[in-house]
Image: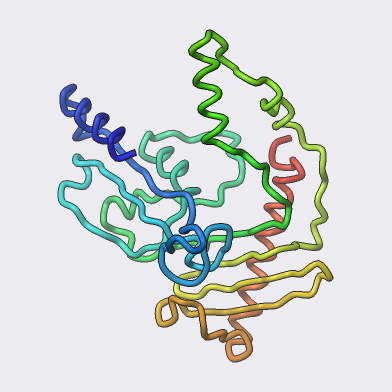
Length: 242
């Protein structure tokens, strides 16, 4: 990735368009267990901070002439609404958005995130993808003139919604981040729910659970989180795409 971005940045300079071109990139999740961490508790696959926090860099010399850093929490779901605002695009039938526009942050006006962020590690298992093996095989197939490679690996039904999820139960581990407060909602297989509340400003390692001492805040954030979870289920069930 370093080499690829180096080539890209060099060519943008050669073309003379680098000052008003946005380069925006980040990692996709926390460090692997036993390998490393991006800071805090947990690793990849978890929604404690060690599984969520990643570095991100946005380069836009025309708008950000000098390097600076921010501790305002951001999310990859913010990228789309940010680009819409930068491009001056307004969609008539915009589907629900979890993210917010970060143009205020880019312009140096945003000092705090105005909207909480939700996370949900649903217990549905992922699809195993041995990317190194498959990409190597695909490359050899393409060299031989077969652009698609092994077609049995294509998920042609990926856009079909075959499962309907209940809207009154939210299994797995979810979290609601309203900086500096972060509420965890953990529902086990018996539908028992455990709540954990942390103040990340003073407890970035999420060790001191304040749920029993901050009952009013816990209750309010739980209601907000469950409303968001219900909206996620609506999307999973296809209601946002009708």
